[in-house]
Length: 171
Ligand SMILES: Cc1cc2nc3c(=O)[nH]c(=O)nc-3n(C[C@H](O)[C@H](O)[C@H](O)COP(=O)(O)O)c2cc1C
Image 1: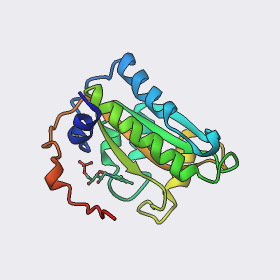
Image 2 (image 1 turned 135 degrees about the vertical axis):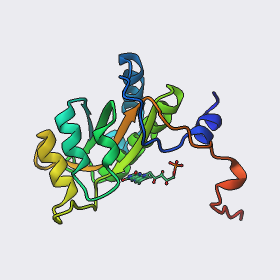
Image 3 (image 1 turned 30 degrees about the vertical axis):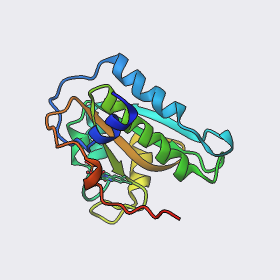
Image 4 (image 1 turned 120 degrees about the vertical axis):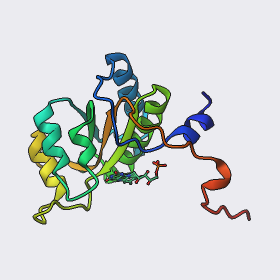
């Protein structure tokens, strides 16, 4: 698939078959995250691969909505940013998430970005803080989001260029 084809195919996949993802596919997805560019090449991101079912279940409750698929995914990649290494941790983490999202398509793996930054759980607790505690990450780490991964049990229609809708302005 060309990069454009991958981008057209990329959809958020929230339902998974329950099959495991092969180590090779997971490795390729992680490589994509590690290859993402970072401001001043500071590389502030640490990728936590989570397969432990109890932790995945806990992560699915870390915010009040939109994280349920984490309880059923084969693996999740939590992208932590270290603000002491780079003030661009949000941008750097987001690019890593996007690169992995695209590589997942190339590998035939379903994935979905699960936002944690600026979100709360049902009790109004900060979702980022919940994720840090669940995964035992250093207290100063920050997290934009988690990528849920699994073999796809749904196949939404690919995007098509006339449908995407965002305007471009030619000057
Ligand atoms: C910054 C960002 C945050 C997102 N957060 C969530 C989320 O928390 N839960 C979820 O189910 N989908 C989330 N998504 C997926 C979007 O809902 C999805 O990308 C959008 O609806 C377009 O659909 P598509 O990915 O199938 O093209 C997020 C996507 C982005 C880019």
